[in-house]
Image (cartoon, rainbow, N blue to C red; front, top):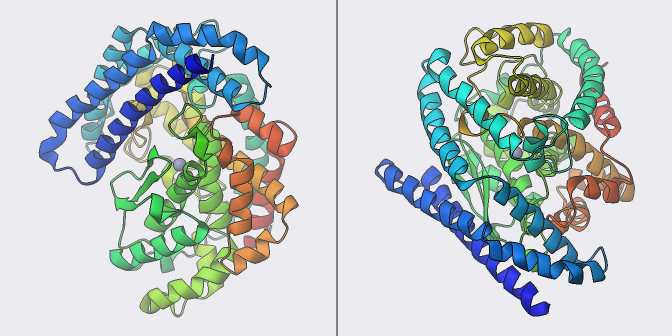
Length: 501
Ligand code: ZN
Protein backbone atom coordinates (compact mmCIF):
# COMPACT_ATOMS: atom_id res chain seq x y z
CA UNK A 1 0.00 0.00 0.00
CA UNK A 2 2.88 2.35 0.84
CA UNK A 3 4.11 1.81 -2.72
CA UNK A 4 0.75 2.63 -4.26
CA UNK A 5 0.42 5.65 -1.98
CA UNK A 6 3.85 6.85 -3.12
CA UNK A 7 2.88 6.33 -6.74
CA UNK A 8 -0.21 8.47 -6.24
CA UNK A 9 1.84 11.21 -4.54
CA UNK A 10 4.36 11.14 -7.41
CA UNK A 11 1.62 11.53 -10.00
CA UNK A 12 0.07 14.41 -8.06
CA UNK A 13 3.49 16.04 -7.64
CA UNK A 14 3.95 15.98 -11.41
CA UNK A 15 0.62 17.78 -11.85
CA UNK A 16 1.64 20.25 -9.17
CA UNK A 17 4.93 20.90 -11.00
CA UNK A 18 3.11 21.59 -14.26
CA UNK A 19 0.73 23.99 -12.52
CA UNK A 20 3.62 25.71 -10.74
CA UNK A 21 5.48 26.12 -14.03
CA UNK A 22 2.32 27.67 -15.48
CA UNK A 23 2.17 29.98 -12.46
CA UNK A 24 5.73 31.18 -13.15
CA UNK A 25 4.79 31.93 -16.77
CA UNK A 26 1.68 33.71 -15.60
CA UNK A 27 3.60 35.77 -13.03
CA UNK A 28 6.14 36.73 -15.70
CA UNK A 29 3.35 37.68 -18.09
CA UNK A 30 1.83 40.12 -15.59
CA UNK A 31 5.10 41.64 -14.37
CA UNK A 32 8.04 41.70 -16.79
CA UNK A 33 7.05 40.13 -20.13
CA UNK A 34 7.24 42.42 -23.16
CA UNK A 35 3.91 42.83 -25.00
CA UNK A 36 5.34 40.90 -27.95
CA UNK A 37 5.34 37.72 -25.89
CA UNK A 38 1.58 37.66 -25.37
CA UNK A 39 0.51 35.34 -28.18
CA UNK A 40 3.13 32.64 -27.55
CA UNK A 41 2.60 32.92 -23.80
CA UNK A 42 -1.10 32.26 -24.17
CA UNK A 43 -0.30 29.12 -26.15
CA UNK A 44 2.35 27.98 -23.67
CA UNK A 45 -0.05 28.39 -20.75
CA UNK A 46 -2.71 26.52 -22.69
CA UNK A 47 -0.32 23.64 -23.38
CA UNK A 48 0.75 23.31 -19.75
CA UNK A 49 -2.85 23.55 -18.54
CA UNK A 50 -4.00 20.86 -20.98
CA UNK A 51 -1.23 18.43 -19.99
CA UNK A 52 -1.90 19.00 -16.28
CA UNK A 53 -5.63 18.41 -16.83
CA UNK A 54 -4.99 15.21 -18.81
CA UNK A 55 -2.78 13.91 -16.03
CA UNK A 56 -5.33 14.76 -13.38
CA UNK A 57 -8.22 12.93 -15.05
CA UNK A 58 -6.08 9.88 -15.89
CA UNK A 59 -8.16 6.81 -14.86
CA UNK A 60 -4.98 5.44 -13.22
CA UNK A 61 -5.44 8.05 -10.48
CA UNK A 62 -9.02 6.89 -9.93
CA UNK A 63 -7.82 3.27 -9.70
CA UNK A 64 -5.10 4.15 -7.18
CA UNK A 65 -7.61 6.09 -5.08
CA UNK A 66 -9.98 3.08 -5.09
CA UNK A 67 -7.21 0.63 -4.21
CA UNK A 68 -5.99 2.82 -1.37
CA UNK A 69 -9.44 3.40 0.16
CA UNK A 70 -9.48 0.26 2.42
CA UNK A 71 -6.01 1.24 3.69
CA UNK A 72 -7.21 4.79 4.37
CA UNK A 73 -10.21 3.40 6.29
CA UNK A 74 -7.82 1.54 8.59
CA UNK A 75 -5.80 4.66 9.46
CA UNK A 76 -6.59 7.20 12.21
CA UNK A 77 -9.19 9.64 10.81
CA UNK A 78 -7.03 12.66 11.63
CA UNK A 79 -3.89 11.36 9.85
CA UNK A 80 -2.24 13.25 7.00
CA UNK A 81 -2.62 10.25 4.69
CA UNK A 82 -6.39 10.19 5.13
CA UNK A 83 -6.60 13.94 4.50
CA UNK A 84 -4.35 13.57 1.46
CA UNK A 85 -6.51 10.81 -0.08
CA UNK A 86 -9.78 12.56 0.72
CA UNK A 87 -8.58 15.80 -0.86
CA UNK A 88 -7.07 14.06 -3.89
CA UNK A 89 -10.37 12.25 -4.46
CA UNK A 90 -12.32 15.50 -4.23
CA UNK A 91 -9.98 17.14 -6.80
CA UNK A 92 -10.15 14.07 -9.05
CA UNK A 93 -13.94 13.88 -8.99
CA UNK A 94 -14.23 17.62 -9.51
CA UNK A 95 -11.98 17.38 -12.57
CA UNK A 96 -13.50 14.24 -14.10
CA UNK A 97 -17.09 15.50 -13.90
CA UNK A 98 -16.31 18.28 -16.38
CA UNK A 99 -15.87 17.00 -19.97
CA UNK A 100 -12.55 18.24 -21.47
CA UNK A 101 -14.37 19.50 -24.58
CA UNK A 102 -16.57 21.72 -22.43
CA UNK A 103 -13.55 23.06 -20.58
CA UNK A 104 -11.80 23.94 -23.83
CA UNK A 105 -14.94 25.74 -25.06
CA UNK A 106 -15.26 27.60 -21.75
CA UNK A 107 -11.62 28.77 -21.76
CA UNK A 108 -11.91 29.91 -25.36
CA UNK A 109 -15.07 31.85 -24.57
CA UNK A 110 -13.60 33.40 -21.40
CA UNK A 111 -10.51 34.63 -23.26
CA UNK A 112 -12.79 36.40 -25.77
CA UNK A 113 -15.07 37.76 -23.06
CA UNK A 114 -12.10 39.09 -21.08
CA UNK A 115 -10.57 40.74 -24.13
CA UNK A 116 -13.89 42.38 -25.00
CA UNK A 117 -14.33 43.58 -21.42
CA UNK A 118 -10.87 45.25 -21.39
CA UNK A 119 -12.08 47.32 -24.37
CA UNK A 120 -15.71 47.79 -23.31
CA UNK A 121 -14.96 49.03 -19.80
CA UNK A 122 -12.91 52.13 -20.68
CA UNK A 123 -15.40 52.84 -23.49
CA UNK A 124 -18.32 52.48 -21.03
CA UNK A 125 -19.93 50.16 -23.58
CA UNK A 126 -21.97 47.54 -21.75
CA UNK A 127 -23.89 46.58 -24.91
CA UNK A 128 -20.65 45.41 -26.48
CA UNK A 129 -19.84 42.92 -23.73
CA UNK A 130 -23.44 41.91 -22.90
CA UNK A 131 -23.64 39.06 -25.48
CA UNK A 132 -20.47 37.58 -23.96
CA UNK A 133 -21.85 37.86 -20.43
CA UNK A 134 -25.06 36.14 -21.57
CA UNK A 135 -22.97 33.25 -22.86
CA UNK A 136 -20.92 33.22 -19.64
CA UNK A 137 -24.12 32.85 -17.61
CA UNK A 138 -25.12 29.97 -19.88
CA UNK A 139 -21.71 28.30 -19.49
CA UNK A 140 -21.85 28.80 -15.72
CA UNK A 141 -25.24 27.07 -15.60
CA UNK A 142 -23.90 24.16 -17.66
CA UNK A 143 -20.84 23.96 -15.41
CA UNK A 144 -23.08 23.69 -12.34
CA UNK A 145 -25.23 21.02 -14.06
CA UNK A 146 -22.26 18.62 -14.16
CA UNK A 147 -22.49 18.51 -10.36
CA UNK A 148 -26.26 17.92 -10.11
CA UNK A 149 -28.12 17.27 -7.91
CA UNK A 150 -27.78 20.48 -5.91
CA UNK A 151 -30.05 22.63 -3.75
CA UNK A 152 -29.29 25.84 -5.62
CA UNK A 153 -27.64 26.15 -9.02
CA UNK A 154 -24.86 28.36 -7.56
CA UNK A 155 -23.94 25.71 -4.95
CA UNK A 156 -21.46 23.72 -7.10
CA UNK A 157 -19.75 26.98 -8.08
CA UNK A 158 -19.46 28.07 -4.44
CA UNK A 159 -18.19 24.61 -3.57
CA UNK A 160 -15.29 25.08 -5.92
CA UNK A 161 -13.84 28.03 -3.94
CA UNK A 162 -15.50 27.70 -0.53
CA UNK A 163 -16.01 23.96 -0.17
CA UNK A 164 -18.80 23.07 2.23
CA UNK A 165 -20.69 26.36 1.82
CA UNK A 166 -24.05 26.66 0.06
CA UNK A 167 -26.28 29.46 -1.22
CA UNK A 168 -28.56 28.87 1.77
CA UNK A 169 -25.74 29.19 4.34
CA UNK A 170 -24.23 32.24 2.66
CA UNK A 171 -27.62 33.94 2.21
CA UNK A 172 -28.51 33.41 5.87
CA UNK A 173 -25.16 34.85 7.02
CA UNK A 174 -25.52 37.80 4.64
CA UNK A 175 -29.07 38.59 5.81
CA UNK A 176 -27.86 38.72 9.40
CA UNK A 177 -24.83 40.75 8.43
CA UNK A 178 -26.89 43.25 6.46
CA UNK A 179 -29.27 43.81 9.36
CA UNK A 180 -26.31 44.57 11.64
CA UNK A 181 -24.35 46.67 9.13
CA UNK A 182 -27.00 49.02 7.74
CA UNK A 183 -27.58 50.95 11.02
CA UNK A 184 -23.81 51.34 11.49
CA UNK A 185 -23.36 52.64 7.95
CA UNK A 186 -26.29 55.05 8.38
CA UNK A 187 -25.00 56.38 11.70
CA UNK A 188 -21.56 57.03 10.22
CA UNK A 189 -22.59 58.48 6.85
CA UNK A 190 -25.00 60.92 8.49
CA UNK A 191 -21.89 62.61 9.96
CA UNK A 192 -19.46 64.85 8.05
CA UNK A 193 -16.95 62.65 6.16
CA UNK A 194 -13.41 62.17 7.52
CA UNK A 195 -10.70 64.30 5.90
CA UNK A 196 -8.30 62.04 3.99
CA UNK A 197 -6.45 64.79 2.09
CA UNK A 198 -3.22 63.85 3.91
CA UNK A 199 -3.21 60.56 1.94
CA UNK A 200 -3.73 62.36 -1.37
CA UNK A 201 -0.37 64.10 -1.67
CA UNK A 202 2.74 63.25 -3.66
CA UNK A 203 4.43 60.09 -2.35
CA UNK A 204 7.43 59.04 -4.47
CA UNK A 205 7.18 55.43 -5.63
CA UNK A 206 10.61 54.38 -4.38
CA UNK A 207 9.84 55.63 -0.86
CA UNK A 208 6.43 53.96 -0.88
CA UNK A 209 8.13 50.76 -2.00
CA UNK A 210 10.75 50.96 0.78
CA UNK A 211 8.10 51.54 3.43
CA UNK A 212 5.93 48.69 2.10
CA UNK A 213 8.90 46.32 2.22
CA UNK A 214 9.77 47.46 5.76
CA UNK A 215 6.26 46.71 6.99
CA UNK A 216 5.87 43.44 5.06
CA UNK A 217 9.16 42.24 6.64
CA UNK A 218 8.09 43.38 10.09
CA UNK A 219 4.77 41.52 10.06
CA UNK A 220 6.56 38.35 8.94
CA UNK A 221 6.45 38.03 5.16
CA UNK A 222 9.68 36.16 4.40
CA UNK A 223 11.64 37.80 1.57
CA UNK A 224 14.10 34.88 1.59
CA UNK A 225 11.16 32.88 0.24
CA UNK A 226 9.45 35.59 -1.75
CA UNK A 227 9.69 38.93 -3.53
CA UNK A 228 7.62 42.00 -4.31
CA UNK A 229 7.13 43.28 -7.88
CA UNK A 230 4.93 45.73 -9.74
CA UNK A 231 1.83 44.79 -11.70
CA UNK A 232 -1.55 46.22 -12.79
CA UNK A 233 -3.85 44.00 -10.71
CA UNK A 234 -2.05 42.93 -7.52
CA UNK A 235 -2.04 39.22 -6.64
CA UNK A 236 -0.08 36.57 -4.74
CA UNK A 237 1.33 33.49 -6.42
CA UNK A 238 3.02 30.37 -5.07
CA UNK A 239 5.50 28.20 -6.96
CA UNK A 240 6.57 26.24 -3.88
CA UNK A 241 6.86 26.72 -0.13
CA UNK A 242 10.23 28.37 -0.79
CA UNK A 243 8.91 30.85 -3.37
CA UNK A 244 5.68 32.73 -2.65
CA UNK A 245 5.58 36.07 -4.49
CA UNK A 246 3.51 39.19 -4.05
CA UNK A 247 2.78 42.10 -6.38
CA UNK A 248 1.49 45.63 -5.94
CA UNK A 249 0.82 48.82 -7.90
CA UNK A 250 1.78 52.39 -7.04
CA UNK A 251 -0.19 55.61 -7.26
CA UNK A 252 2.19 58.46 -6.47
CA UNK A 253 -0.75 60.70 -5.56
CA UNK A 254 -2.51 58.36 -3.13
CA UNK A 255 -0.77 56.58 -0.28
CA UNK A 256 -3.29 53.84 0.50
CA UNK A 257 -3.35 51.95 -2.79
CA UNK A 258 0.12 50.43 -2.74
CA UNK A 259 0.59 50.26 1.01
CA UNK A 260 -2.59 48.45 2.00
CA UNK A 261 -2.41 46.41 -1.20
CA UNK A 262 1.07 45.21 -0.24
CA UNK A 263 0.01 44.31 3.30
CA UNK A 264 -3.08 42.53 1.92
CA UNK A 265 -1.02 40.39 -0.45
CA UNK A 266 1.60 39.78 2.26
CA UNK A 267 -1.25 38.33 4.36
CA UNK A 268 -2.18 35.89 1.57
CA UNK A 269 1.49 35.02 1.15
CA UNK A 270 2.17 34.50 4.87
CA UNK A 271 -0.60 31.90 4.93
CA UNK A 272 1.07 30.08 2.03
CA UNK A 273 4.56 30.43 3.54
CA UNK A 274 3.20 29.03 6.81
CA UNK A 275 1.90 25.72 5.41
CA UNK A 276 3.49 22.61 6.94
CA UNK A 277 6.70 21.78 5.05
CA UNK A 278 5.70 18.14 4.56
CA UNK A 279 2.63 19.21 2.53
CA UNK A 280 4.69 21.12 -0.06
CA UNK A 281 3.88 19.99 -3.59
CA UNK A 282 0.93 17.84 -2.42
CA UNK A 283 -2.82 18.45 -2.64
CA UNK A 284 -2.70 19.74 0.97
CA UNK A 285 -0.06 22.37 0.23
CA UNK A 286 -2.30 25.45 -0.15
CA UNK A 287 -4.84 27.51 1.79
CA UNK A 288 -8.09 25.64 2.29
CA UNK A 289 -10.71 28.03 0.86
CA UNK A 290 -11.29 31.44 -0.67
CA UNK A 291 -12.89 32.67 2.53
CA UNK A 292 -10.07 31.45 4.79
CA UNK A 293 -7.48 32.96 2.44
CA UNK A 294 -9.23 36.30 2.37
CA UNK A 295 -9.60 36.20 6.17
CA UNK A 296 -5.82 36.39 6.45
CA UNK A 297 -5.18 39.10 3.85
CA UNK A 298 -7.87 41.18 5.55
CA UNK A 299 -6.57 40.46 9.05
CA UNK A 300 -3.16 41.87 8.18
CA UNK A 301 -4.50 44.67 5.98
CA UNK A 302 -7.38 45.88 8.17
CA UNK A 303 -7.49 44.42 11.67
CA UNK A 304 -3.72 44.93 12.11
CA UNK A 305 -2.71 47.38 9.35
CA UNK A 306 -5.52 49.88 9.91
CA UNK A 307 -5.41 49.71 13.73
CA UNK A 308 -4.35 52.43 16.17
CA UNK A 309 -1.70 50.29 17.94
CA UNK A 310 -0.08 49.45 14.60
CA UNK A 311 0.22 53.11 13.60
CA UNK A 312 1.42 54.15 17.07
CA UNK A 313 4.54 52.23 16.11
CA UNK A 314 4.74 52.82 12.37
CA UNK A 315 3.43 56.37 11.95
CA UNK A 316 6.61 58.09 13.26
CA UNK A 317 8.55 55.95 10.79
CA UNK A 318 6.24 56.92 7.95
CA UNK A 319 6.55 60.59 8.94
CA UNK A 320 10.35 60.29 8.87
CA UNK A 321 10.12 58.93 5.33
CA UNK A 322 7.68 61.63 4.18
CA UNK A 323 8.42 64.68 6.38
CA UNK A 324 7.18 67.21 3.80
CA UNK A 325 3.83 65.47 3.51
CA UNK A 326 3.16 64.23 7.04
CA UNK A 327 5.25 66.13 9.63
CA UNK A 328 2.30 68.36 10.46
CA UNK A 329 -0.37 65.63 10.29
CA UNK A 330 -1.16 64.14 13.71
CA UNK A 331 -1.39 60.41 14.33
CA UNK A 332 -5.09 60.89 15.08
CA UNK A 333 -5.80 62.64 11.77
CA UNK A 334 -3.85 59.99 9.86
CA UNK A 335 -5.65 57.17 11.66
CA UNK A 336 -9.02 58.74 10.83
CA UNK A 337 -7.96 59.18 7.20
CA UNK A 338 -7.00 55.53 6.64
CA UNK A 339 -10.31 54.52 8.20
CA UNK A 340 -12.58 56.89 6.30
CA UNK A 341 -16.07 55.41 5.81
CA UNK A 342 -18.26 56.57 2.93
CA UNK A 343 -20.82 55.33 0.46
CA UNK A 344 -18.74 54.81 -2.66
CA UNK A 345 -19.09 53.29 -6.11
CA UNK A 346 -16.03 51.06 -6.41
CA UNK A 347 -15.82 47.82 -4.43
CA UNK A 348 -12.03 47.51 -4.30
CA UNK A 349 -11.75 51.02 -2.81
CA UNK A 350 -14.55 50.50 -0.28
CA UNK A 351 -13.90 50.81 3.46
CA UNK A 352 -14.26 48.03 6.04
CA UNK A 353 -17.84 48.98 6.97
CA UNK A 354 -19.49 49.36 3.54
CA UNK A 355 -17.41 46.71 1.72
CA UNK A 356 -19.71 43.79 2.46
CA UNK A 357 -22.73 45.57 1.00
CA UNK A 358 -20.88 45.65 -2.33
CA UNK A 359 -20.39 41.89 -2.06
CA UNK A 360 -24.01 41.12 -1.15
CA UNK A 361 -25.23 43.04 -4.18
CA UNK A 362 -23.02 40.99 -6.48
CA UNK A 363 -23.89 37.71 -4.78
CA UNK A 364 -27.64 38.39 -5.14
CA UNK A 365 -27.24 39.31 -8.81
CA UNK A 366 -25.22 36.15 -9.45
CA UNK A 367 -27.96 33.99 -8.00
CA UNK A 368 -30.66 35.87 -9.95
CA UNK A 369 -28.76 35.61 -13.25
CA UNK A 370 -28.16 31.88 -12.75
CA UNK A 371 -31.79 31.35 -11.76
CA UNK A 372 -32.84 33.16 -14.94
CA UNK A 373 -34.65 35.84 -12.93
CA UNK A 374 -32.35 38.66 -14.00
CA UNK A 375 -31.58 39.05 -17.70
CA UNK A 376 -28.11 40.34 -18.56
CA UNK A 377 -29.62 43.23 -20.55
CA UNK A 378 -31.37 44.41 -17.38
CA UNK A 379 -28.22 44.26 -15.23
CA UNK A 380 -27.14 47.94 -15.57
CA UNK A 381 -30.54 49.23 -14.49
CA UNK A 382 -30.78 46.67 -11.67
CA UNK A 383 -27.33 47.78 -10.51
CA UNK A 384 -28.34 51.45 -10.44
CA UNK A 385 -31.56 50.70 -8.58
CA UNK A 386 -29.84 48.52 -5.99
CA UNK A 387 -27.15 51.17 -5.47
CA UNK A 388 -29.80 53.79 -4.84
CA UNK A 389 -31.34 51.52 -2.18
CA UNK A 390 -28.13 50.35 -0.50
CA UNK A 391 -25.84 53.35 -0.78
CA UNK A 392 -28.09 56.31 -1.58
CA UNK A 393 -26.00 57.08 -4.67
CA UNK A 394 -26.30 56.08 -8.33
CA UNK A 395 -23.33 55.25 -10.58
CA UNK A 396 -23.14 57.87 -13.36
CA UNK A 397 -22.11 55.19 -15.88
CA UNK A 398 -21.55 51.43 -16.19
CA UNK A 399 -17.78 51.81 -15.91
CA UNK A 400 -18.39 52.78 -12.28
CA UNK A 401 -21.24 50.26 -12.09
CA UNK A 402 -21.60 46.74 -13.43
CA UNK A 403 -18.46 46.86 -15.62
CA UNK A 404 -16.02 47.53 -12.76
CA UNK A 405 -15.05 44.00 -11.69
CA UNK A 406 -13.12 41.56 -13.83
CA UNK A 407 -14.77 38.50 -12.22
CA UNK A 408 -17.81 37.95 -14.47
CA UNK A 409 -15.72 38.68 -17.55
CA UNK A 410 -12.66 36.60 -16.64
CA UNK A 411 -14.41 33.52 -15.26
CA UNK A 412 -17.81 31.92 -14.56
CA UNK A 413 -20.62 33.88 -12.90
CA UNK A 414 -20.86 32.68 -9.31
CA UNK A 415 -18.60 31.15 -6.69
CA UNK A 416 -16.02 33.85 -5.99
CA UNK A 417 -17.52 37.03 -4.51
CA UNK A 418 -18.97 35.46 -1.36
CA UNK A 419 -15.41 34.56 -0.27
CA UNK A 420 -14.48 38.22 0.22
CA UNK A 421 -17.26 38.82 2.74
CA UNK A 422 -16.76 35.45 4.43
CA UNK A 423 -13.11 36.48 4.75
CA UNK A 424 -14.01 39.64 6.68
CA UNK A 425 -16.22 37.64 9.03
CA UNK A 426 -13.65 34.86 9.53
CA UNK A 427 -10.76 37.29 10.00
CA UNK A 428 -12.43 38.77 13.08
CA UNK A 429 -13.61 35.39 14.31
CA UNK A 430 -10.07 33.94 14.24
CA UNK A 431 -8.51 37.15 15.57
CA UNK A 432 -10.85 37.21 18.57
CA UNK A 433 -9.68 33.67 19.39
CA UNK A 434 -6.04 34.73 19.11
CA UNK A 435 -6.69 37.67 21.46
CA UNK A 436 -8.42 35.40 23.98
CA UNK A 437 -5.41 33.10 23.99
CA UNK A 438 -2.87 35.96 23.98
CA UNK A 439 -4.22 39.31 25.24
CA UNK A 440 -0.65 40.67 25.00
CA UNK A 441 -1.02 40.80 21.19
CA UNK A 442 -2.45 44.34 21.39
CA UNK A 443 0.46 45.79 23.37
CA UNK A 444 2.91 43.96 21.08
CA UNK A 445 1.37 45.64 18.03
CA UNK A 446 2.20 49.01 19.62
CA UNK A 447 5.83 47.92 19.77
CA UNK A 448 5.83 46.72 16.18
CA UNK A 449 5.99 43.08 17.29
CA UNK A 450 3.89 40.51 15.47
CA UNK A 451 5.45 37.19 16.50
CA UNK A 452 2.78 36.10 18.98
CA UNK A 453 -0.08 36.80 16.57
CA UNK A 454 1.69 35.29 13.57
CA UNK A 455 2.77 32.17 15.49
CA UNK A 456 -0.80 31.65 16.69
CA UNK A 457 -2.11 31.97 13.12
CA UNK A 458 0.56 29.61 11.76
CA UNK A 459 -0.10 27.06 14.48
CA UNK A 460 -3.89 27.15 14.27
CA UNK A 461 -4.56 27.95 10.61
CA UNK A 462 -1.65 28.31 8.13
CA UNK A 463 0.20 25.11 9.04
CA UNK A 464 -2.79 22.91 8.15
CA UNK A 465 -3.00 23.92 4.48
CA UNK A 466 -5.96 22.01 3.01
CA UNK A 467 -5.90 19.27 5.65
CA UNK A 468 -9.21 20.51 7.04
CA UNK A 469 -12.09 21.95 5.02
CA UNK A 470 -13.02 25.50 5.97
CA UNK A 471 -16.05 24.42 8.09
CA UNK A 472 -13.83 21.84 9.90
CA UNK A 473 -11.09 24.40 10.48
CA UNK A 474 -13.55 27.00 11.81
CA UNK A 475 -15.00 24.41 14.20
CA UNK A 476 -11.54 23.37 15.41
CA UNK A 477 -10.24 26.89 15.92
CA UNK A 478 -13.35 28.60 17.28
CA UNK A 479 -15.39 25.76 18.79
CA UNK A 480 -18.40 26.47 16.55
CA UNK A 481 -19.57 27.26 13.00
CA UNK A 482 -19.01 30.54 11.17
CA UNK A 483 -20.79 33.40 12.99
CA UNK A 484 -20.82 37.17 12.64
CA UNK A 485 -20.78 38.20 16.33
CA UNK A 486 -17.04 38.95 16.72
CA UNK A 487 -16.94 40.80 13.40
CA UNK A 488 -19.85 43.09 14.27
CA UNK A 489 -18.33 43.67 17.72
CA UNK A 490 -15.02 44.56 16.10
CA UNK A 491 -16.68 47.08 13.77
CA UNK A 492 -18.74 48.58 16.62
CA UNK A 493 -15.69 48.98 18.86
CA UNK A 494 -13.44 50.45 16.22
CA UNK A 495 -15.85 52.69 14.33
CA UNK A 496 -17.94 53.47 17.41
CA UNK A 497 -14.87 55.17 18.84
CA UNK A 498 -13.85 56.80 15.56
CA UNK A 499 -17.29 58.21 14.87
CA UNK A 500 -18.49 58.59 18.43
CA UNK A 501 -21.52 56.35 17.87
ZN1 ZN B 1 -7.25 39.03 -1.40
